[in-house]
Length: 341
Image 1 (cartoon, rainbow, N blue to C red):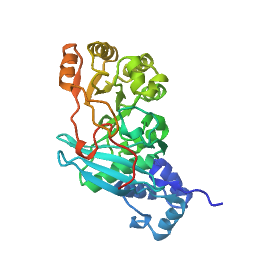
Image 2 (cartoon, rainbow, N blue to C red):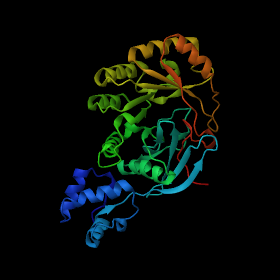
Image 3 (cartoon, rainbow, N blue to C red):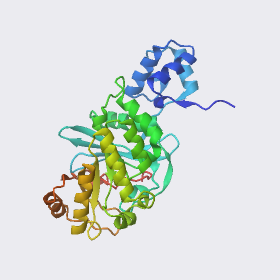
Image 4 (cartoon, rainbow, N blue to C red):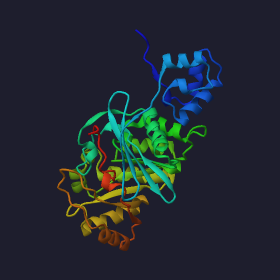
């Protein structure tokens, strides 16, 4: 039986060099190939400075990631662009390009679907299919920039899926996107959001990658959080806060805590007080999120202005997230795995 082809976009430069030498080619060809992969090519035949025999060898040994744009939507409010990508196996994921005064950020997915079950998030609605490869995540960044025509200067892993459940592939993606010979996007321009997988947070702390860690908190008390986020049954609030304290101690990187405000659920005075204590323990920053409407959800957005003032008066470092792409369902919590219609 013929060996399964390897995905060339997921190979680190040193691995690519070994692969090229195994094909009987000089090592310097690996740099040429890596450059082509960084530019974005849809076929090996486009690598015009490689010999035809080498291109044929690559075709026989590797697959090349090039997602297909199934749908492109542009917000009439703020220019945000949402993409629905078809992957090689027919599955689809979404990513979003957001424009800010300081640069352009792409929000990418790390899994096809999501199994976490957070009740305020559309991404979990159709279930989990599989993890994305490092090359597929890299392709989201690369092709979002190429298709939108804007340079990508920042990345947030906050799209579909739980990044820390796909830890090894995400770690490889970070190495690739950060590589000086590649897109060279610095770790401090990358944010990774987790619903609270404590073992993954501990691994990140050990590696000290200097990215920005974002915790989807959404409630400071166990009783409320477990109603909103099933993951809280495995890792309760106290365990999560302990992991965050350790993360800050090891990395000296301030954690951003995400908090979608829901009327009558997580917006009480007592919860504001609890948040104040939690932020002081972790040296964290609270990112207050206006709850975005999700089809079929009974949840009602809370008053972010009033709650933000309440927190500020308690000494909490808090900002209200700017709402981008809501008219095309590209805002926080609205991405989902779906087919084009």
